Structures are given as C-alpha cells and as structure tokens.
Image (tube, rainbow, N blue to C red; front, side):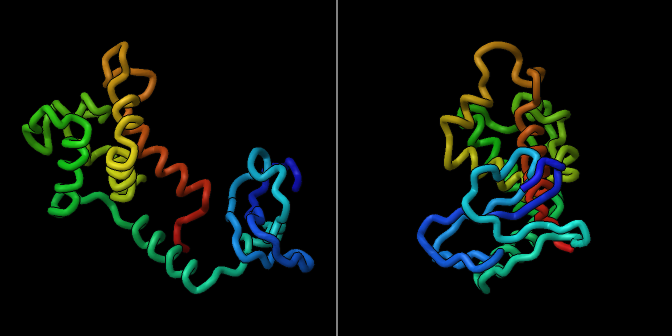
Length: 186
C-alpha cells in the first residue's frame, strides 16, 4: 500500500485460508475500506486495490453479502420525512431515550436544542444524513445508553453550545461513514 492517499479495500484474515495471487480465500475475514493514507497498515492480505484506471475497487462478495450491501444502500437513499409516521415515532423514541424524565412538547419545539439540534425543528438537520442517521442515533441510545447519556449530558457547559452539537454530530458521523466507506449506490 502506498501513502498517496488512494482508496483501498482490504481483508484481514481471521482464520487460515489460501492466498492465491491478489485474492484471499479465507473462511472468515474482516472487510476494511478507506484511505491508504491512514487506514489499513498492518493488514495481512490486501484483496482488492483500486488502480489508477478503476473508478471503484473490485472484489467478490457472497450472495448474502451483496444482498446486505444492497439493503444498506437502499436505506441510505431514504431521506428523513417529517410527514411519515414511522419517522416521527423514531424521533419521539430518540427524545424518550435521551430525556426519559421530560415529556416532549412537540416535534417542533425549543426542547430539541437541549439534544444538540441546531433549531427547534430537527428535521432540518438531517439533510445529507437521511433517515439512517436518525436510526443510528436511536441505535446508539438503545444499545449503549450509558455512553449515549455521557456524551449527551456533558457535566460542564450548556449541551447545545459545546464544541459540537451532539445530535448534529451524530448525523454528520453517519454521513461521513457513508462517504468514507463508499456506500452510496451508483
């Protein structure tokens, strides 16, 4: 791998397999993708590398992996839509996970600023992150409640004017991961 800042996809072997040329045949592996400038050093097998002439790296996925990737890509394309009841319920669920002791007065409310949204209507902050960024924030709140609360309820300072607004940072993390992992369909 070089340090010119190109992109790559690499697989680190977890169990022993065959290595034939530039293709890995291991029974269990971790897929890693990113920039060669900072990610991937020390991996034991580079299985697909973007060439100067290639628009995207190529590697073979199993049928199950391909289906999973397609489902993820289709979810990435779903924008947040405040008129969809499921999206409204997810937003309410996020509020309840963040502030279980405080009743939400409405989907448009100054209360949202306490969570780190830029204004009183969080739907305006989803732009590039889409609905999946709300799903990711909700997953974080439900699966890692202590970490979620620790980050949300910083001990010092006003939550909505820290170095970063918590909720908007979560949306941006989702957006950045989609970009870095080249997950957009197309």
